[in-house]
Length: 129
Image (cartoon, rainbow, N blue to C red; front, side, top):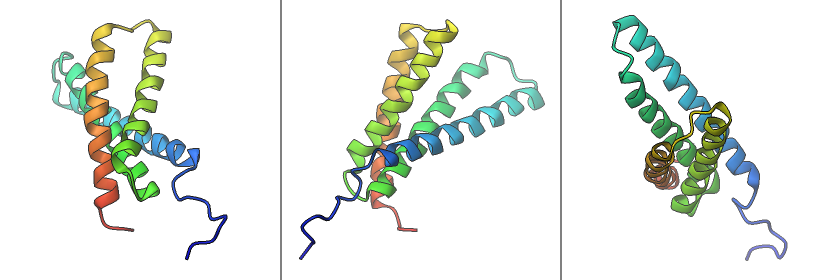
């Protein structure tokens, strides 16, 4: 029988902070990798938009996986919350830098929802470390 005052697993905002940090680190690594790829292979700069979308998807996926693993349950909602936090942070950054557009928000929102939810489910159902 569980203790009366036992804290629920996964109720801490620290979970989302860690998942966002891991997601942003993974997205940053992917962005650096794709930048190197464009430079090394002398690809047209037009590829940068597609690579940016892929890096953002990986960012949300890793964030969702981390949230799902740390929470241990409710992976779909946990992954969505982590991905939405990242989406809001990126939208604020693009607003501040002056690159904000409606297409950015709509495309990135769809990417965040799909990748974050998928990552959360993978995180909950994956092997425990």
